[in-house]
Image (cartoon, rainbow, N blue to C red; front, side):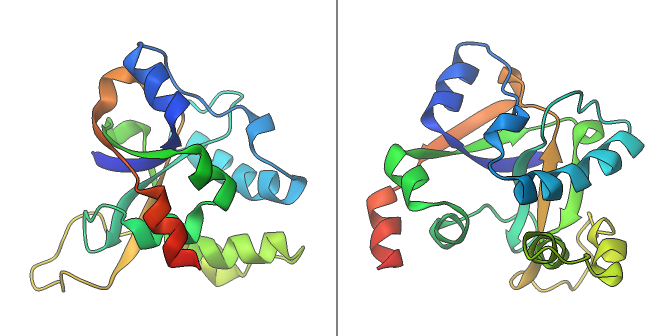
Length: 176
């Protein structure tokens, strides 16, 4: 499955050196963010994705259109100024389908905002979050497609297809 993930430059270097990338829980800042990430773990286990003792690694399946790769506006919305200043690469991956948990980004945001606000996530969002359409239907509009995110247990070096260095200066100018 073709996916994209924003990663710091150190991740790309490690992958190029043959090192598997995982996300230790201490990299997930704050108890509420950890609680949100923890919500993905049982779903991954239920799908027999070997998450182990790590947090999920986030990636994108579709942005703006089915199979659409993330752009500068997506990076602007997701990444902090510190992350952008440190340098971020958009890596392109080819991941075995069996190791990917897809979910609806709009419904995930409803869940995330509730958890961050110390509220109970909406039942409807929880129900719909993991019900995503993974094959384009005939006549589906090419744009304004609901974003699909992906959670992975890790990133293997041989999944790396390509990468691009984000123009972080351009992205930071968009922010101001």
